[in-house]
Image (cartoon, rainbow, N blue to C red; front, side, top):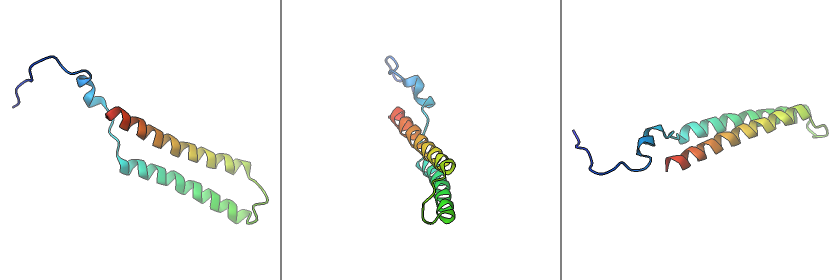
Length: 85
């Protein structure tokens, strides 16, 4: 059993347990899955239009949404790391 440390508590000491932890493996997996979906959609578009003469705006919008999600995962992880330090 440890004895109490004398003196006043340190600022933010009570918040230490509420700081989220960031697992690089989880972040990498989430981003990889989103980028795999992006690549799959891009490949489908290339197969449907090998010359790239037609732009499918719906597909482009979905691809942009996947990239935004990947960016959000990375941004959230960076924010969490910043809070933990």
